[in-house]
Length: 63
Image (tube, rainbow, N blue to C red; front, side):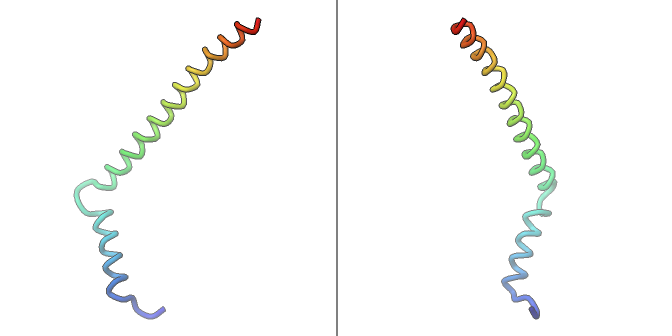
C-alpha cells in the first residue's frame, strides 16, 4: 500500500485528460445521455400508442 508506480499515475493522468480535456467534454457527454433518455422515453410512448389500437382490433374481432 506504499507509493503508486508510474503506471498508476499514467492511468490517472489519462482519465483526468479524458474527463477534463477539451472544452465541454463532460457537458457533451451529459447532453448525449439526456438525448438518449429522451429518445428511449419517446420510443416507449410510441410503442404504447401502437399497442392500444392493436388491442382494440383484437377485441373487436372477438365480439
